[in-house]
Image (cartoon, rainbow, N blue to C red):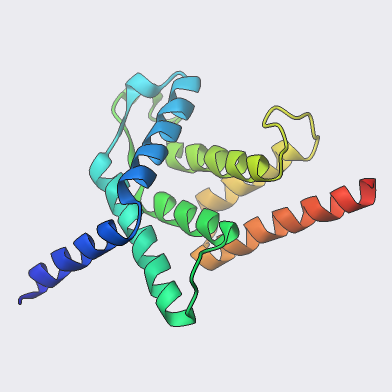
Amino acid sequence: MDSKDKEMEHIHYLMAKYSFEKRFKNLLIQMQDILEAMGILDKVEINTDLLGQAVLNYFEDVDRLKGFADIKRTNEDKIHGYETFWLLRDHPIQITDNSIAYECLYINEKVFTVMLVAKMLKEVNIDVNSRNPRLMPFMKLMFYNFKYRIFTQQSLEMMVTAFFCGCEFSAAAEA
């Protein structure tokens, strides 16, 4: 068996073991919804090959981690961090209209910032439209870091964990 056959066998293994199609479709819908809300869905293309590669990379990373650390179920912090990392790395959103090229130069970073924050807020039952004065600076800092800083799957997981920890402290202080 040559290396190409082994690679295809591994891809089929990942797709059979994990809910690849469901994850792919959910991400695609979320991305389309955000791009539509931004009013630019018709000016960009979501490269489904790159999106598929990001999903495969995510599942491969998680599968390797589960095997190494003997983990049965991946926690939400890890899911959010690792998924966002691979989406940002593979840049599935492509600009097709030059009229928005400059303002949307970092469209992947912007969309995946919104997606990640929305998922985190939903998990702690905070309305996405909440008027918390710290939310927008948090999102701007995250977006800035996605654009200009080095990050890893693990550092994103740590950021998500810290966010949830802060929410728990805040809830405890209010009680």
